[in-house]
Image 1 (cartoon, one colour):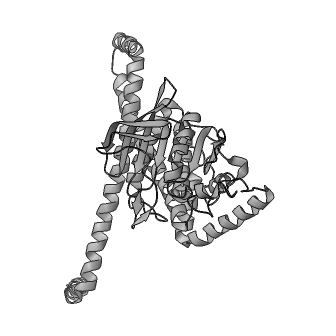
Image 2: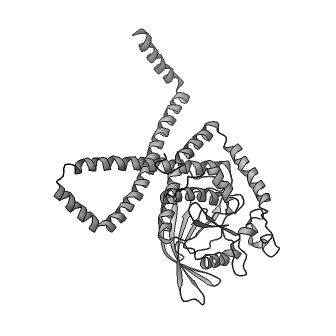
Image 3: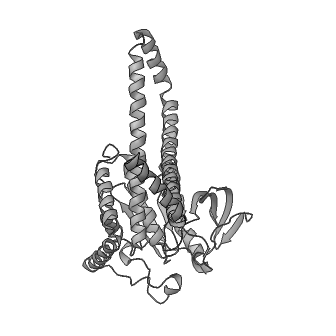
Length: 386
């Protein structure tokens, strides 16, 4: 699998070993213990977020940013942490789901940090518990105002598991406006994981495709800004590294989680989320490898065909290719994205087909012992007596 990226094969091998041992719980506890140790060694503190005047701005009193990595705003505290990942040189802002009294602060941060992408991994209410205040206009509500900031819903596209919104932001006293692309994953339970890894990968790819056109810090939040936020970030960092073809080998998932936790506590909150992030990367690598194998096969066929073409025709085709190189590159990128999506969907269809077959035979064996006995008896009779 290192045809995809250096170290990709190791990630798959490590995942398979953890699956075989089923030791996700112990691996997660080891990460937790090392995280606490590095927090002490780095002398990470939380004095600013726990100051009396700032406590009402924290959704959860036990999930706050470190002083050393606070998003610095002019005279405003916000429960948000910022880091740039050296592997990809991508900047992330991790934050909690805005409260009613921090929604203006949220947009102040987006405006001041010049963020063009917001990734939301929760819904407003989950199991009748508020998880995030409605901090933007949606559905029929086209305009909302939060303090000095007016938000207009320019466009809203509802996909199967996520919604993409285009938001226009204007600030009182400013002539210019800003555009923010808002991605909300709508089927991810708190403390849980998405039901379908391929649907989630499609969401990450959608964010990646847009981010590569704007090169902006990504604001990422769930409710607390640690569990689902950390899981998304692990997957996004590694997919970004693979797509950018960085020279460094991919780190193991546990090492990456430990690195991220130096900047915000508790990122990736459960063993299930740790396993899911690892599985998502493994499936992405396998899909990418399948696509590369297919492209190499097609290229071999084309090269064999070219050998039978006259030199004059080959030169003419080369000139046409050079003249259309820009258009072809754009089309190739589009085909590449579609192939990745198709490969992921095909893997999902294969998985569901195998699962359906297993479930069918499991039902037969459990609910129809007489029929099963008859079938087994017939097989034995045929094998030994006929």
